[in-house]
Image 1 (spheres, rainbow, N blue to C red):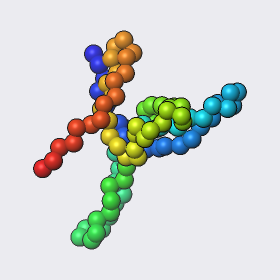
Image 2 (cartoon, rainbow, N blue to C red):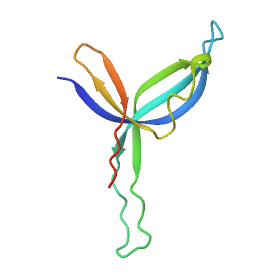
Image 3 (cartoon, rainbow, N blue to C red):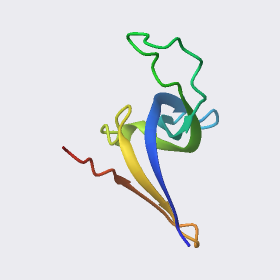
Image 4 (tube, rainbow, N blue to C red):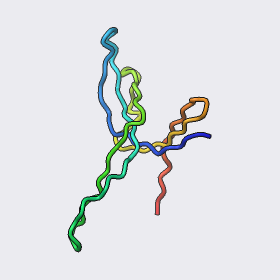
Length: 97
């Protein structure tokens, strides 16, 4: 049974291979983890923002010479992990209201 996750880009950075010197763009994908909300006084305005943590799910390294901003910070994707190990990463469909 495939695993379906909504993931978000939480990091973009540079990386290099110490042996060859090849340069890469490192992309970090994570899922949101709900954290317990701290106690807050009633009728506080503005309310305390909901605390959010992130659990790294996947790191992708794209050769810098082939990087053309395929991913952007905070962009969301649907990640499917098949039983065979095949991964499918597609931009999340956003709903408008």
